Length: 146
Image (cartoon, rainbow, N blue to C red; front, side, top):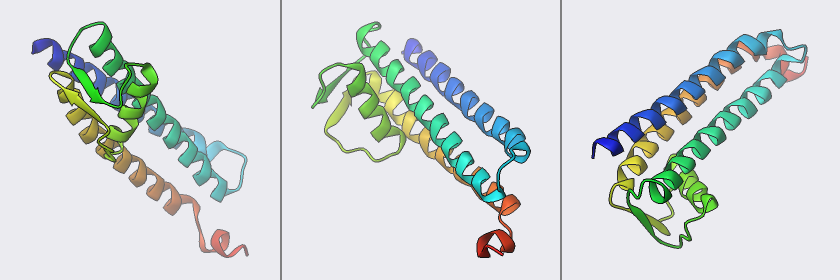
């Protein structure tokens, strides 16, 4: 059980750190870009999506490792054990979509629960960041094209 807790702490710490760094660097980079203000928002969206994709893949690698290297739990359903299946499961869990065609069993369930919570928090963090960036860069003039 201690191993599962340690894996969860490491994975969550890593993805939160990555997310923080992405948002921090975008905050510093966006004002210096030589593009129209409204395009900075688009670049911010792509930056946030990139951060989320990296974070999902980190969870996927953790699932793969827990299943294949550490023997902590398994999945049932439409799951063949591949890294791509782990990534698919991770995307549906991170976004709290949860199709239900793959189900975690035993120790891997704990990472699933913490991934849903982490994904929810990081997605809302991105939304808040983008909202603040929109407030900063979108003026009445930019919206109306005047």
